[in-house]
Length: 309
Ligand SMILES: [Zn+2]
Figure 1 (cartoon, rainbow, N blue to C red):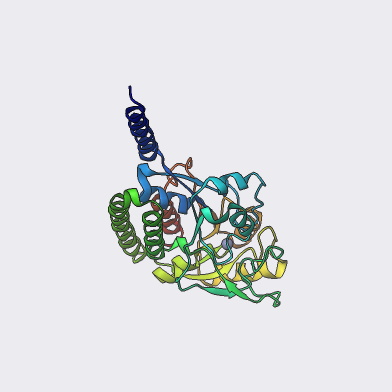
Figure 2: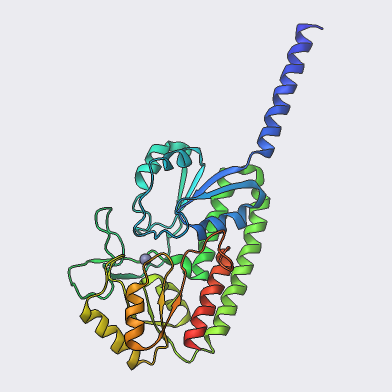
């Protein structure tokens, strides 16, 4: 065999190997929270390998990342985050991952709700005040944008655009799936509108301000928030005020959240003689009925319906 011939055969083999590797290789992507990971999975389908940062049961507001998270970040090509202060821990991981990682901030361009002291201003300040009673908090953005399915559509558009930009091999595939998923979100939005139009009560008491965007979209109104800061129990005066509000507006339940200790909600519910129901802003891959973003929103709508119909 001539050297020339051998050279061509080798070239051919290398090209073959390379393209096979490329075709089977999924795009490694990381998302900060599970609902985003699910959206990315819905759009990316078989061509993405999605992981997420926040473990099941953790609250994004008190999350402490392990140093081993560096590995996940440096092997990912895209990091999808909410922004608006939710991922107060993320900056150093993004920096360590270097220029090979594209970071997409999904709250960009979204009209944010600003509340007194809601959520983190910086890493040191784990404050989340909503009642405004302590008075010293400044106005910061509420990061819980994904709870509104119409905002979720704008997030899905950003996800689709980023997947297409980083992974040229599957542009058509991502666009088609993205479009189909947007249609499902439209259906979800219409279903919610229909259900909420039957609610007899528009006011609710939530554990923390996770539901503000949902309330803004569908004309519901927060009458009070139980936890001024994650893990900080309300004062007796705050409890008294919330109980009075529940009675005044004939609210039938207070909403707790699985990621935060429900004790304060239970105390208030007992005082006001109403039920504690569980709303879940995050869901998880192994939670029955909350395993996808769409199912998660439907689950929460059902819980609300129980308390507000
Ligand atoms: Zn929150």
